[in-house]
Amino acid sequence: PNNSEFIYCLLALLKINAIISPVSPELTPFELKGIFHNLNPHAIITPSASIEKVINEYPDIFEDKILISQGDVVSKGRAKRHYKLRELYKETSYRINNPETPPEQTATINYTYRGMGSPLGAMLTHSNYAEGVLAYVENTRMAPTHRIMSLLPPFHVYPLVGCTFAPLLCG
Image: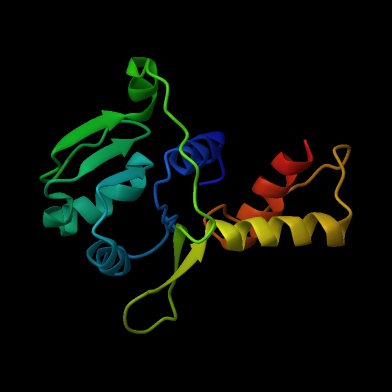
C-alpha cells in the first residue's frame, strides 16, 4: 500500500543488500502462490489483511519463513517466526553495517501478471535504478523545491524511480 512503512522497509532492505520483490496486495492467492514458490523468500513483510487470504488457502507457503506484518495476523500458517513491524523496530537496537553494493547486484525482482498462467519476474539491478533515477532527474529537471504526488502503487517500477528514489536524490 501507499504508506510510509513501505518506504521505510524498502530503504532498510536496500541498506542490507537484500533482494526485494514488491508485489501488489491485490493479486489473487493463486498469483501470490506462484510468486512465493518462484522466489522462495526468507522473509515476507506484509500488511496483515493482504496476507490472510493467502495463509488461509496455502498455509504451506510460510513453512520456515519469517513473517513480518503491520498488525495482528490471525493465522500464521507454518511460519518460523512472526513479528509485528512496530515491535521489531522497537526491539532493534543494533546498527547495520552498510557494505558496498556492487552495481550489477540484483536490487528487486518485479512481477507482472498477464492474466494467464503464472506471473513473470524481471530482475533489476542497482545500476538499473541508478541510471533510471539520474535520467529521470535530468529529463524532468527535478529540483528540491518540486513536489510530487503519486497515485500509482509503490510496487511498480515507475513510482519507485520517479516518486521515491528521485526525490530522495534531489533532497
